[in-house]
Length: 70
Ligand SMILES: [Zn+2]
Image (cartoon, rainbow, N blue to C red):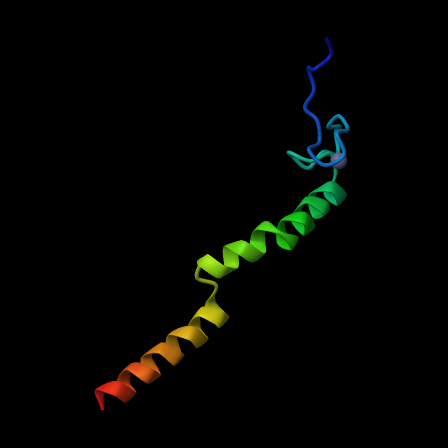
């Protein structure tokens, strides 16, 4: 048994002194971030309030609302 050291979730290397927890290196951190942006992040944007796009939608909504009220 030698599971006394944590391992990088990206490359499965043992975390060394240069580790960027929980990754073994800055590079693996970037890789994880890229993966995240690629998949999860996109679906998050659709449901969450990310300023630009949501703002545009809200404006559209209130515009047609005031039109029918008028
Ligand atoms: Zn790594």
